Length: 223
Image 1 (cartoon, rainbow, N blue to C red):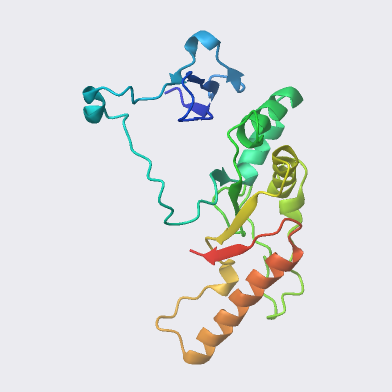
Image 2: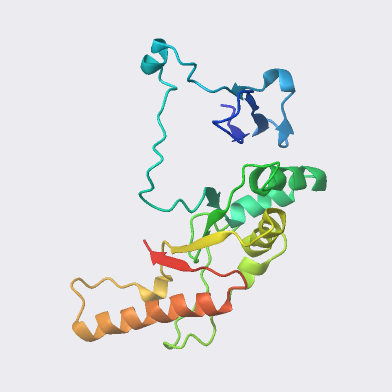
C-alpha cells in the first residue's frame, strides 16, 4: 500500500473576502521527496458566511465570540529526531520553504508553539535512547543530551532554525514519555524508601534536562 504523507499549510484569515490558497506537499514510500503539488491540485478556503439563511445549516459556518475567556498561546507541532532526520535529507531549498511555510510570521502558518521530547521517545531514530543509559547515582554524573544536539538528527538544531524563521523563540513544552529502564522496577507496591528514591531520580532527570538544553522549555511534564 502506498503510504502518503500530506502536509497542508494554510493561513486562514476569516476577515478576508478572497480565498486563501493551500500549499500541498507530498512524500511517499514510492520515492516522492516532499514534492510541491501543482497549483491546479491545490485547494482554497473561502469565508462560509454570505449573509443568507442557508449559512446557518452549513457545516462550514461558525461564530467567533469577541468575549475573551482564556489566552490563546498559538498553534504548532512537535520537534522530533524523526522529523529532523527526514527534513535534513531534503534539498536545502525545500527545507527552507517548509520552515517558511510553517513558521514565517508573514508568509507562513505562523507556528509559535511546539513540543520537544525528554528522552526516551518513540521517535528517537535510529535507536531508542535516554540521557542516562547506565545506572548511576542521583546526581546523574553521566547524563548527556548529545543526541539532541546532532546536526543531522537532533531536534535542537531544528528548533533553532524554526526560531530564526519565526523571528522569535518558539514557546516549547518538554514531555517525558518513558524513564530509562534502569529506573524502572518489577515490584508492586514499592517499599516506601524505593518510592522516594525513584522520585528523586525523576526530579534530577527533569532538572538536568532543563539546565543543559540550549532551547528554553518553560513547561515540562511526565506522561
